Image (cartoon, rainbow, N blue to C red):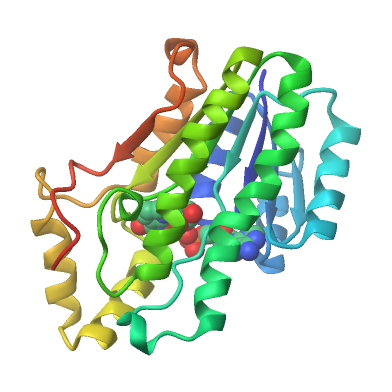
Length: 253
Ligand code: NAD
């Protein structure tokens, strides 16, 4: 049985990961900024830890980590998953506050989670950290500069932490989901449609056209990859940037 921490774990990809680990018999602790989603998670999985905490709030995250430290004596897997899509628009149309919030949630929130995980796992001499980047962390992404910047930053953090922690026996990898079917991409497509003047159908079609397998992906595809990284089949996999995307060729519509 593994002990698994997932940020942004009450819905979307984080919840899909949590459900899969729980189905394997693992113990899961999630935090999420959305109290209603946390309450729904707690109702569905009463035996697990679920905490309302914003990944950018050091005091809230310290309280969440304290809850985990008190309940468990070690952690096997930490998924630094919480993220936000940020605004859509040409850079000259973006506000500093929208830019800062996108970078803060995607990057600084991940820093706080990784800092805590690194300390625990280095001391234990084992562990796996999975950071959630995006195909936006591998390609230029017009109209989404804050998001692309933050997700490229996650790649830099992953490669660096894999080097800092590898000698201590800790693995660090990033996942890069492509466009995932679900509420979040519905919101993103609507936002990009408004920013570009293209119809929703045109924006959706452009995502498919830029992918070799001509497909979107599912939350289960992403969770499968995280489960594989946490399995005995991936014990020599570290410092890797693993795309789950049907092979993106371009994010340019
Ligand atoms: P989602 O919006 O469906 O769920 C994200 C969850 O994170 C929500 O429960 C939300 O409340 C929580 N959250 C948001 N900001 C938070 C914060 N500051 N602190 C704590 N929790 C917070 O999104 P998702 O699709 O599940 O995205 C999860 C991760 O995957 C993100 O890092 C996202 O950038 C990345 N990603 C998503 C897609 C996609 O197509 N959905 C593609 C590539 C990467």
